[in-house]
Length: 200
Length: 200
Image (cartoon, rainbow over the protein chains, first blue to last red):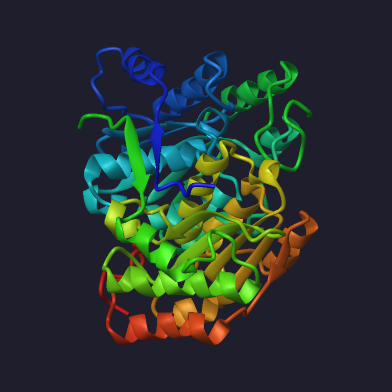
């Protein structure tokens, strides 16, 4: 086995045009929490339609100005990379864009994710330097669709708040959870080792 | 702000030669847990000496044969990527090497890390497909050196065991924690937003 020295995390080609069309002339400024979530949810749905990964999308914005700094979709199967959840991809690309591992160095930064973070992404939030987290669907919706969300501390929202990170839940919750429901109804593959791919 | 489309996770150039010399003719097979940990700890120390990141190293091996599948060091500051902890880098490169997000598809796979995983890396363990986890230093040693390890569930070892992942703690614990102690003593920078870089 030759040791691998490098791996690239790259968005699928459809993402750039899709984001441009979704923003439709508004540049890269997204004013409200609902508009930001609408883009994250649209990315989650399009990611399934394009067959580039699971039904999860996320964006990173400046929480005050609404400037879009990064975009992510679940790319676990697309990249063969178990850590490539939407939130992790969005963090990585936003950090690359601002040239810092600490997004807080670029202003008050917000992660907007189509589904409450799993245990890994929860743990990644404080390291990223974001000041706030906006979630659409809940863990129960992801689990109802067959996904394992891992074991977060029971008080995960309080855990983030103690670290100065505000959390808002259920933003466009119906729209966000519908993507997960539709994914399960279409027998979409599940990308974690606990269950056989394709099984729900 | 131009949206970034891709980011590369690449090991520093010193790693390949260092691993080759550390294995010294034994090929890429490392028989015992202690020998595996010795390599992870050596990587953690060398990463500081080379100034390519924090004092953390990890390797991914086949737990039965000892074949080395991937290597990681903390590259947060080197890559400007908050998610580039040693364990996450090792997972990504091992998954690239075996061409699957599920390391379990390549056999019974083990993560060996110089320090107990932080909250993010704990959450990433089940998604990676490993069957066992071997840790050197404890959370308290990382925290004593100024690192924030995040909020894992109190029963994190049991949580992994319930998922079929065996956990072994304190393997070469003295050697592993000494790297963290020496890092703190030399005023090494701390790569998370909670404390100012350089402050302990």
